[in-house]
Image (tube, rainbow, N blue to C red; front, top):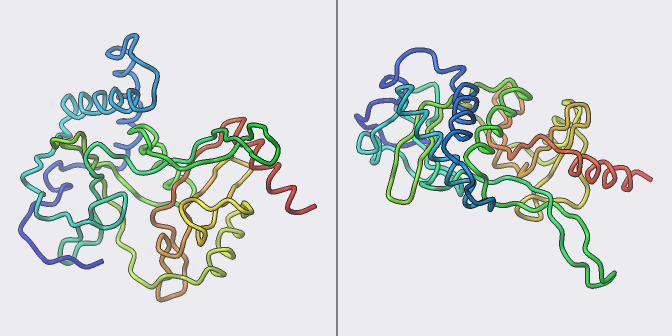
Length: 257
């Protein structure tokens, strides 16, 4: 995605140094901060997201990762439903900023009422991620696909915290669905039948060996480079807990029988 050239400072240049391990350190340090500031706060996901955002902002203040919104507000352009995107001229990376107070999507186990059986049944739904879930998602992407997404810092807007990351810029075309299926099969991931993430043309995958599930796997979230390599760029990835693992395995195995 191309954007007009501007004179805004690149986030990496403002921060300086190697940001490769910032994702992990931010997640660990903010986790410890959360334990000290949260106390007996409410348990809803919305309340948890608020407290996690406060912990990350506290981490940014103490670690020198606070960015100034004014430096970048004219650089980032809407790049989808989860991020604003900026690609400076001749930059080897793309910069992403979450929408204020929003941290992308996450897949969660839930229950819903089946009118046919008149019983509650488990299912996986997509919802708003908490800040920590967003950081976990990026770390899983780095781990599984050898990506190099880095957390550069954050700023505050009226609606809430904004997380700013960088990711290597991959140029190419959207692959065919068959190419996505072949690539994910090579990684050891099995397709989850009948479980799209956001729409009926999305795939979902599960790798049992390390319990990594990948959702929102549509052609817009992969790039096929000129040499023909398939590169995932923005999947919704989670590490399955016991309940999700059992549910996904049953669903995959039932389709094979």
